[in-house]
Image 1 (cartoon, rainbow, N blue to C red):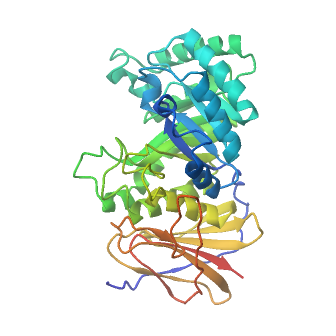
Image 2 (image 1 turned 180 degrees about the horizontal axis):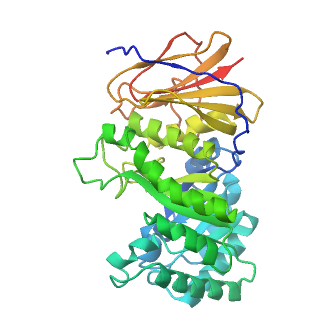
Image 3 (image 1 turned 30 degrees about the vertical axis):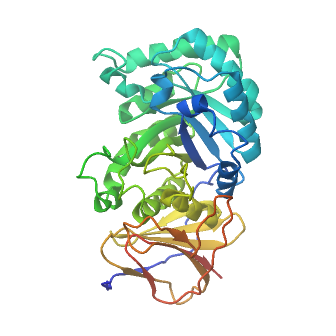
Length: 418
């Protein structure tokens, strides 16, 4: 392994002025396809492993139901599947963001489904989304001329139908894939007024492309920045919270050797800290359990690499997060924990070279928790030297701080200060 002479001085480590926004307790989230409700075996309290793994990520969080199958449905979930979803939410303590079909369904059907969801989820229901990635409808679901005005008119009709059945129904959107210019007009013109703005982001893709590599994934920061700006502008203009309702490393199910690696875990963890530092309300990583990008799979071991990235964020117990400027291939974040402790999160974005993290002389580190694997391309990811069992059991081993501390390629380190 080649040692780099680069180092990161994590200073200033005092709280910035003004203080960064507070991280919501339900910041962490998972996103599932609507089709999972038709299968009926995943999002149910009988799936004890999934309940345990979700709870391991936090006492609160957000489950989002949607994806391509919500608008390209071969059927819609019935009362039994939706009732099971409600019990799953109560078992985990997490809330719900639920997507309604705008691609093929009817207004009456959407209203009926919304009523079932509202009854089953109760106070756990945050809002309904109408349409998944409607800015892509012109590719297969609508005419090539389909645009924002068409979407907004259809959205309003469907929202009105739901409100006629559920007068207090709340809505989120526009849940776009890439047309950031849709954010502002939706935020200002959608009626009823949304309670939450949402969009999607995938760092790379498609999964079948050999051009998708670990290096490109870890270097995708500029593309992420471009996808955030217009959404944040709409949120500031309207005062509405903003959530990344669906995201992952590589679209179309991920790419083996990229999406199921330490690099993906590091990418996902850093994305969470970045969005928290910028004031986003949360992030939902898309989970199709049989695909390489899944945080939680169907076959043991269920906790996949991206799950460890999410667990890294949860272990920081963030109340406020701020970015500490560093070198291009390194990133560092200061975390004010909900437990009153101060922590620093370090990420090495370089897939080829190691790096060092150095604390200021006046800073004393108590312990460190390492996100690691044998190599950036390895799927044998651990956090604190331990894996997560299918029942959610995790017994990490904290390290003593050694200065300077080595960060392996694509590795992460969570440091607690005295």
